Every structure is written in C-alpha cells, then in structure tokens.
Image 1 (cartoon, rainbow, N blue to C red):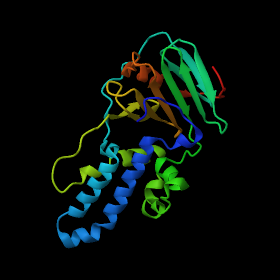
Image 2: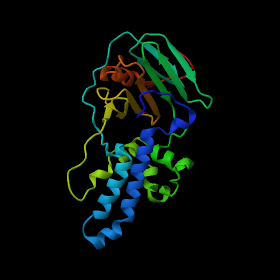
Image 3: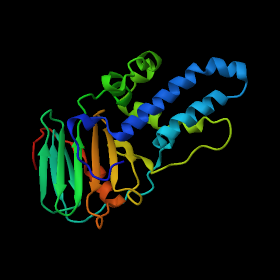
Image 4: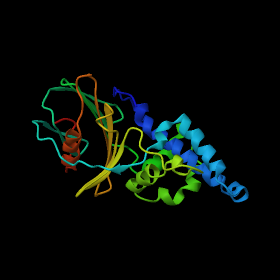
Length: 251
C-alpha cells in the first residue's frame, strides 16, 4: 500500500481491490481444477495455483479478524458532511479540500499531517459486481461463475471475498495469517471492514456499510513521519459516521 494518498479518478480500483481481484482469479482456477483433483487424489494443483498467485500478490493472504478495540477518541475535532453523509474526525486543524470532477470523491489534507479521502462508489452493487463490470480488469466471465454471490448484498460480497484466502486451501500446512491486518467491525447502525493496522501501517481503508445498504470508503493516512494514526481515532470516524437527509459539499 502507498503511504501517501493521492487519489485520482482512475485510482477508484485501489491496490487492495486488485488483490481481491487476484483472489477471485485463484478461486476460478480452483473451480476449474476440481476435475483434475478427482483424478490426482491430492489437491496439488490447487496448492500450486494458490501459491503462484500469492507470490505475485502477497496481500491475498489476508483474512479478517474481529476488531478488538472500539474505544473512540474524545479529542477536539470537526464534523464533516459530504454527499449526504456526516462523520467526525478527531483533529481540529485546518485542512485543504479537493473534490473531483466525477463526484463522489473528496480528499482532505489536514495541516496536522492526516489525510482523509472519502469515496461514495457510483456502483453500489458490491465489490464483486464492480470488479466484473470494470472492463480494465478483464474479468467479465466471472459473472457466470459468481452469479449467485453477485445477487447478494455488497457487505456479503466483501465478506465472502475477504474470508476466502487462496493459501487457506493448501495441500499441507495451517491457514495463512494476516500480513498487514484486516478487521471486521460491527456497530448498531453499521458494519464493515478495516483494511490495515494503524500500529503497522500509515494507511487504513475503512469499508463501511450502513443498515440501509449504502457503502462508502474512507481512506485515512498520514504524510508526516512523526504523525501516526491510532485505533481510537479511526473508531471516532466509524462511530460518528451516518447518513443525513441532505448532503453538502463542505462542512
């Protein structure tokens, strides 16, 4: 993952989304190899295929764990509202705002060293559906294989992909562990996934799904070496996030 968040329109498919796309490719190969497995008697084909893809994209080893800490920061902060949603950040420094032409994406650069990029995907059908419909990934044929999963909610699609690491299907050895940290969270009015551990990374992706089925992505990062994000700061954003009746382009 990049330590700096410089988002442009083409970066909608972020690095970890491409990793998930790689995971989907492994799943397809595994399905194709089922016939060979019946003949071989040992899933060596699966093991070799999974290992090859994981060598190219180490992030596919990731499996989510439950978020262990829900404590939220009570530091002085700001309430922000964009595209019909509102959330708080635990920093009160001034910031520069950059919106993008296609809408649904705004980047905030705080003078105190934090960056927040807020994204409302135009495609609210789910990650798998988005991957299939993204012509640049050339995975249109997945629709025939995952048609049932694509009919499920966006949250269910994320959960299914994140909980199916290729290295968990190995001929020998235990399930692979986390590489950088992926955590599942659940709150009364929302649930989702946190990609990245603030103790190990300078960038975290918050994939948030509210009870109405809306999906947003909040990318939090730091540019200054002396500034680190904490889990309570991320929790402040998560707990305060909610849908409002009318959006605004600025706080």
